Length: 548
Image (tube, rainbow, N blue to C red; front, side, top):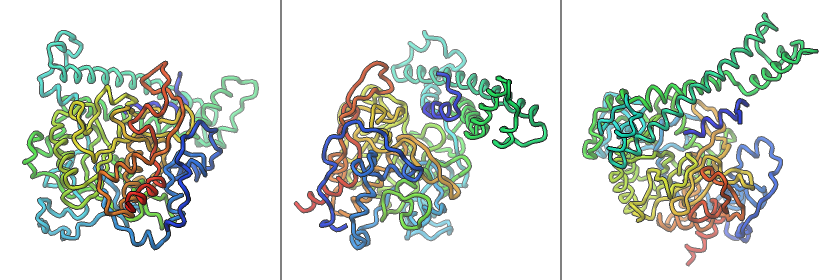
């Protein structure tokens, strides 16, 4: 996603341009206007998604407020909800997740037998759709636009031939334009990386000449003589920033980011399905995959970031707190570094439904979906079985009413189900920056916003880090859905969706969407509900509905 680059540049500083009786009246049931940004200490920012607009002046989901008034007995008596996380590998041994991982009690571990006869051997914790029966897996994939062009016999060596592009069908023309755009972005990134690396190396050389026997530390940088030396003073200031921001590591990450795009995502010669060997057009060809739901955590951390926001333990006094308390995560490894396959998405949805998941979190997306009928059929299957789907709206900064982003639940203009929630990302600043700058939006196709900017969450190997994206907004909604469903288990998926959407906070704030350079529009016009998630309000509404 391009927002990675913007975040990278800004960061390194090189960008050139209860009991019911205890519940109070719903004081959030009003429209909020722009507010000054409160002074935040680290622990407040690290958990801002749980905060309350009234008590904290932060547009969180008010989950902490709800937990503060719910009695322990009420929480203990609540049901456990299984949330399937369709993503990359997940660190199921993480200190903050290990107690909340789903276990298939009908499967005997490591006996190479399909004990529960569900079609998946030794699926004790979930299933990996990115591998084969022999345990070999794929970690990277081409973009869907590249796969479409390959299927049409597109000549990648003459991709600048506009006449040849015009001869293609409309979808393939769009794929060709997308491919050319991304190739152009890649070239720009390579030029930028070269410039950043050159500046970085020049500063290292300056330090080496100034302090030939010292290691690069803030203390040793401060020893450099800058009196009457303007160039030295400028370099020392740059060195300070470089050390504080960990610029060397960030440049390495940027270089790896570019390498993945060049060698895998945009490489038509990379066969990303060779290891698996199945027919991607046939959902009856199911004899693939394995039970490695952890994967290579050195390069796969996205699933762990997502899972923690839903289900990190609330009682162990370490790390973070997930939104839901009585919850189990079902890991489904579906998303490579690149575009996911529609078949894998469709198969994973059905696996989750058939194995007891009540909520499916889908923090992924792409611009093209050649076999989207497979996915639509699985979405309908989930709806028929009372399962809620929560989907990240994407980080392209586009209007998804005008530019389609997949998966979605619409064929043409017709909604195919009522169990699908599309989520945008919210900033913590109650001003024109309220919607995160990278978030997709759409009055018709985005349902609601939730926190997704500077979110502190779990990372592989018992670590924690700050990340951002609609990928993190979706699990916050999934966690809220699991919390409400655990307290009100008789609700249907459709009722639960409506409760979450109808109980959000409204904001009377004028903003500028990323794709509109000069236009200003109200925040309420960015989504169907014009609101952001509030689980405290959702609880009150669920209480009213269940009483009726």
